[in-house]
Length: 266
Image (cartoon, rainbow, N blue to C red; front, side):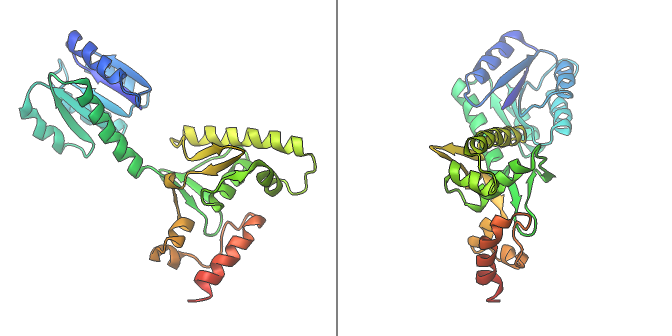
């Protein structure tokens, strides 16, 4: 997570920055003693969580938070204030807002980070559509893959439903007509690295895993119609009409099994 700290009192700002930096969940902390400067920085940089004093010079902390949320709608905001009277108006402004009363402890700062991290993890999943053609979405935006085989690699691992798939199996599936095994393994390694980077850039660094001698998806990080169907979801069942990842020939056995189980028996 990328954090911003804003307080116009230097000692308070330094203490806040040190407390936030102690969190293992924070990759970088940017501290400002001027609200306008903080807002200008946020216009050009992603920010995940902001720790803001309310009584700032020139711009009120509540107004600053509104401006920052307009730039980053999923921003988490923690108001750090010495006045409890500000708590209620702060909490009413946005679903991802909390507050800390000064003086606060490092453990309280971490508790706020843990709370927002939990909320983000619950709502943010990679969405995979397998009925019809295979497509992947990050926050409703189609994920763009630099290589078609990178996308196919992810598709096959999703089809495997979290089971570890060996390098040899993946090579055979992705390049059934290629006879140079070493070349296939090298290319697979580059594809997996490309997939990891693509997912990390989209905000899903842990959606795929390297396990022993193979690879797998973390099914808990993926919202998938195929998985919903297997779990008995009625909406998923109504959405399946016998088409499954139809751009890949290796998907035909799964498609036939799903069709027999969920379409033929309607």
